[in-house]
Amino acid sequence: MRIFRLFVISFLLIAICQLTFGQTGMYKLNAAQLAAIKKQAGITANAIITQNYKLLAKYTYPAIIQMAGGEAKMIATMQKGMEQMKSQGFSFKSLVIGEVGQAKKSGQELFAIVPDVLTMNGNGGSIIARSALIAISEDNGKNWCFVDTAPLQKEKIMEVIPNYPRDLPIPEKSQPSFIQDH
Image: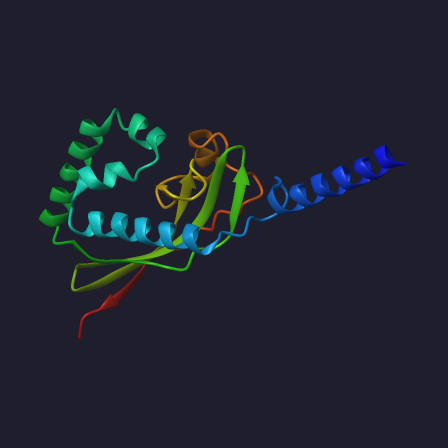
């Protein structure tokens, strides 16, 4: 009888854990995890606006850096892109991080969706682009790295982030909007 009771209790604990943390259930980030993701996403946003690409690389998912040919090459590419943007009269105005969306645990990693809104000046107005970051933590939410979903197709995200939970929805891309200066 005691073995049967232990079996039932074990079964219930496993079922609860699977519902709470399993592949099919969403993960509820605690206050410390939410604070860390929000702070680190904010640091990332500020690094983009201030063109601190070394700091940005620190918070970039390692596979993205590798795809770019390494940190030095990624930084050089970003600097060149920024120079081209400036030569065409465009500049970053702000990058606002939204509230953390859904989260999931897959393997030993936590994943979360973090919406953002990028505003650029140029061409006689402001260009507003809504996107999302995929936040990834390998240490239970203390430290996060990010992947911007804007330049990647959904299929490519699955290649770049092999452990990405297939049932964590990636927001659809939307067309940037333009607001003419008065």
